[in-house]
Length: 160
Image (cartoon, rainbow, N blue to C red; front, side, top):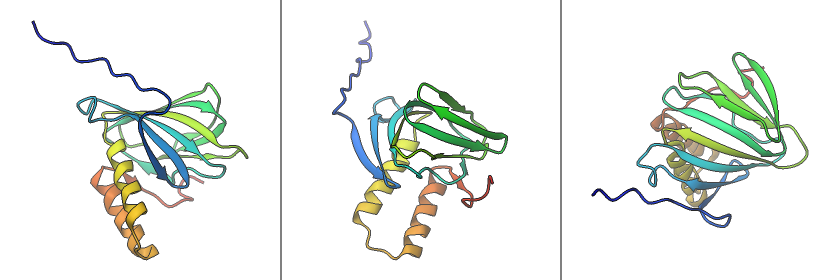
């Protein structure tokens, strides 16, 4: 008889904690634990923060808003996601981004299918922790990491 895959449990203090873009991210379950099937990331997004417009053709990204209020923008319009809201960014590469427009931190539960975004976040956090490079060198390195993981980045005002 084949041994079934183990059930994975993660409590509120477990998971890999990362500092990204002024926020605190926690990889609750990584692609390494799911054979690359998916990853789940808890994102604490400070007021005014969020990723610039970007696209990724090869994975689906979903967000469930646990706390706060976040404005999602895409090429197709915008949506203010409040606590309890769910946002699905399908495969295919639609340009999108989000910002926490409130005065309080927002907390999002992000799932990516297949996994990979978790690896990108790990590399970015590790680089930012250890780098003493100039701003232009840092920007160049981050752009190469985005490219490595299939992310296309756009200027901050791209969706305005």
